[in-house]
Length: 502
Image (tube, rainbow, N blue to C red):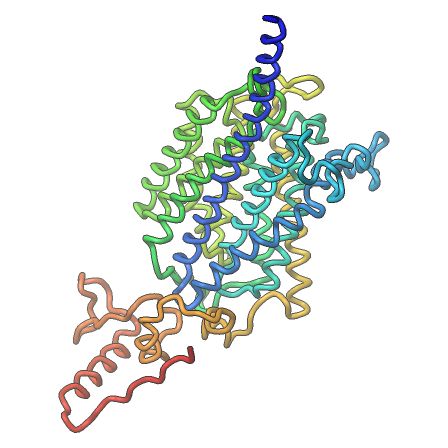
């Protein structure tokens, strides 16, 4: 009788640990949704008010379209494409694992409610949220001028095809980059951030800059977003969500030591030490250069991405140093991109692309010789360097080709008059700030690219802090003087601007 009771207890505990696996990835996925809430707030705040809602709608629709497309074919690509385009004898365009990927087709018994399978659903969900993250990374770079249809198409291409194929090569334990080069990218510096950052760059080149970004002499204007507090809050929410993202990069093994994506023993303690140290280093690195809260919070993200590839291997002070260097890279890289005539509205290329590459190279520099498991070679600098090159190319090349084709057919960018009017007015049946609509219409026709309420600069055109005169100071001064005359003339009633249609 005692043996029967003990057997029942053992069976119950075994089932309990299996259920814990489901619970763990369930909450990792839930936390990852905070990433998209953060990107939503971040990009809306980084947009000028006339584009704010359109920027938010892009994020919402990318999230919605990614889920069914990743269910339809994204998960199958990950399970089948790890050896493509190479076969046993070299290049083989048919080197897909059709048999091993049978569990990833939409009609498989693993792709739905199944009491005997407590892993496929939560793993699919985690990877789906990874795919959504790539789309959100790309989204911010192209705000204020891309067509909504073009964005959705390219976002699905990135998240459900391009990114997941790169993940199959560099994240799958049987991926050809892993087995041939010893490529190591534990928490996705390359397979998420580098790919998404350089995909954004590939689209930005044919998309072109926003109207008003560059002057005739090639100098750049700072087209600031309308709500910096919302942007900074959104960035903090992204950091919260990334704790779910990073946690989902571990393989939960009930009753045994957890392992990373490559089968090397690890745990959450290693992850959290280096995540926090890298984040702090990134903030301080950006603070040293800019003192700007936008860059400081961007540096927090960049620091996390810089340490992500070797998150379970670094000594925490080393993670701080790597994150600090990432924080220095971001504003310098963003300025370089701007000088090249490329208008990256939120510096996604620098934050994700450049810091992702630095994260891959840092593993090769500081962890070379660390052994792999089974047939996986030891870490090497050349393996990481070649891997970074592959991640750059798989993100950049498809995006550039698709972006050029969309531009040729007039499908990539909105018309100039729509951009000047604001994408909200053209695409969104709502207003972001309806209480300011009357003021915006009353001041229409001044500088279309001024994101905030104009100020009166005084009779000499000098700023209130003694700064240089603004170029539009005479225009503002004349308008303010006309308003003062209207208020002092009892016989003149100023016209009321028409209301926008509801």
